Every structure is written in structure tokens, then in C-alpha cells.
Image (cartoon, rainbow, N blue to C red; front, side, top):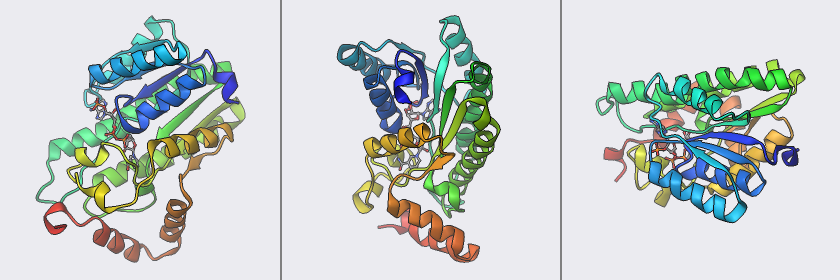
Length: 266
Ligand SMILES: NC(=O)c1ccc[n+]([C@@H]2O[C@H](COP(=O)([O-])OP(=O)(O)OC[C@H]3O[C@@H](n4cnc5c(N)ncnc54)[C@H](OP(=O)(O)O)[C@@H]3O)[C@@H](O)[C@H]2O)c1
């Protein structure tokens, strides 16, 4: 199925690092052209130049801060102005915060919800209708293992990802007989800049992690199989089964032990 995507366009948010940059690399290698967005222009330009040299990829770059409520509209208008039909939307941009109630900054929580939930929702509803009209296309929404349960010390982030999972599964059902597939990607700990941004820079030293390569490979395979969600890695999948079977009280208390805030984690 992916061959059908050659010479078509993918729109990737959060393409300047981690999982988003890996989506760009893999899709470029498979012949797609890319519309890339994030805040850090130099990172996007370096990636675009690498992919153009390696694969002849056409990359369009538009920087935007997705905490700005108007950014999704402006970006989709840019896409239209450049005459691009988006075949694959990868809603990947996102960030989190780990900490206690007292450490939590309300503006930061607003920003997490704006980027992880509101912008993702708007991109999806703006870019899905033309795909449905063509009866061809795909959406990958990056959720998380945290989507399957409440998580103490990162309640806002985990709740945004629960939203992404439910939202994507519902749209998967609506779109499946209309030629378009929607997949929620639910990675566990992955080796990216995520933990630095979330305020727990030592996290990756203490926990096993998948690579962005493993995560993106699983995501594209799931998209090709038209699955509504995918959890990369069997250990991670077992965790989701555990959290569905165990008592909710135990699940959230276990998360409290796992995600102890930085001050208690020495
Ligand atoms: N790493 C993990 O363990 C893990 C696990 C489960 C799910 N995820 C999810 O995977 C996705 C990708 O994260 P990652 O792990 O690859 O982390 P990352 O390396 O920190 O990448 C995050 C990307 O999102 C972009 N972004 C963040 N805030 C933004 C904003 N306000 N406006 C525009 N773009 C913004 C960043 O670009 P700029 O900074 O250049 O704007 C960057 O490209 C996220 O949705 C994350 O929640 C990660």
C-alpha cells in the first residue's frame, strides 16, 4: 500500500526531532514529498536538505508555534496555497510535563492541551474532508501508552493522549468504508527529546526505551493494515492489557510509584 504513496504528500507536525523527524526520513525514503512544520527552523532546514540530497524529496517548510490557536488554520491555508493535496497527515507534535500539583504551571497545561488536543483535532478536521472526497488517504495521530490509563504526576498529558486515542478510533470507524484510514500510534518510552522537555532529563538513563525507528516502523505497518491503533513493542502492549484488566484504583496507584516527581526521584 505504501507504494501508492510515492510522489504524494505527507504533512508532518513536530518534524524537527524525535518521532516526527523519523517519520520524515522513512516516508522520504519511500518516495513521498513532505510538508514539515515545527518551531525550530534550522532543524527543519537541515532535515529537508538531508532528504533532498538522499532521495530528491521535495520538502516544504513552514514554522509555527501550535500553542497559537490560529496556527492550524494558517498552516492548512499554506498547504492549499502551495497546491498540495495531503495524502497522509501525521499529527505528531506534542509535549508533556511531569511534576507535582504545586509545580504545575497553568499556562503550560493550557499549552499542552492546545498542542496535543486542539491543534491535532483541527488539523484532522481540516485535512480529512478532501481525503474522503478522493476516497484515498491516511491519518496517523500520535497518542501514547499513557492513553490507556490515568497517570499520576502527568495527569494533563496522559488525559490529552486518552483523548487522541478515543478521537482517532472514533474517526477510524467513520472513515473505514470511505477509503481513508485513521490510526492512533501509542508508543511507550521512546528515545527522543520528550523527557528533557517534560522536565525529567534523566528518565532515559533509568528506563528502557524503544527507538524512533522501531516506533515509526510499527506505525506505518499498522497504517498499511488499516488498524485503528498500534502499541509498538509487545511489552508495552502487555502493559495496556494489564491496565484494562486490573482494578482502576491499582492502575493509578501503580502509576504514582512509576512517575514519582523529580524531587522524590533522587
Ligand atoms: N518519547 C516518548 O517516550 C513518547 C511516548 C509516547 C508518545 N510520545 C509522543 O510522540 C510525539 C513526538 O514526541 P517525541 O517523543 O518525538 O519528542 P520530541 O523529540 O520532543 O519532539 C516533539 C516535536 O513536537 C514539536 N513541538 C512541541 N511543541 C510544539 C509547539 N508548541 N509548536 C509546534 N511544534 C511543537 C517539537 O518541535 P519544536 O520544538 O521545534 O517546535 C518536536 O518536533 C509527541 O506527541 C509525544 O507526546 C512520545
